[in-house]
Image (cartoon, rainbow, N blue to C red; front, side, top):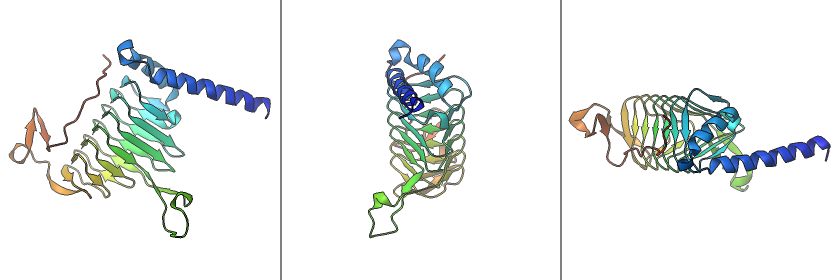
Length: 227
């Protein structure tokens, strides 16, 4: 191995150790503040203050952009590899344990004010399986972008598949599996997800404060906020 290769390997190990340490600094010890000041240097873009809780696993910092006032809860995984990456616009929040995985060219974009519930899964890439005589794991991947519009609310444990666009202001119920586009201002639920109703206000929705709530979709706010 050349001297350059040795240096690159050592630097890579140092970076991995640094990521491990920074990722696990407790929030109670100002971990979110430390992560903000360090991660904004590693990310491809950061438009303002954002809060990332401890335990958030990030791969592909240079392919991820986080908007102002972004809020990412504990144990979220952001994975960007060989793609156009992940873009979170301003005022987005992602609940505990969610997975946002962008690979093989399938960019994931979450619009302004997006509310992503706990354990939501967004994966832009999928296994190719057309050849029944070859192991699926050896057939590669295909990927399509995922576009989440402005002011979209996705309930806990919902799954959003590659190629899906969710229009502005729509709501996805907890546990839904979304495999096709959702127009703006609609509520969808089920497996596979289907249209339930228009987002039309107090006459046909349960009200929580000033928001329309479909039962089972309540957003769990991440615990850390920067001033």
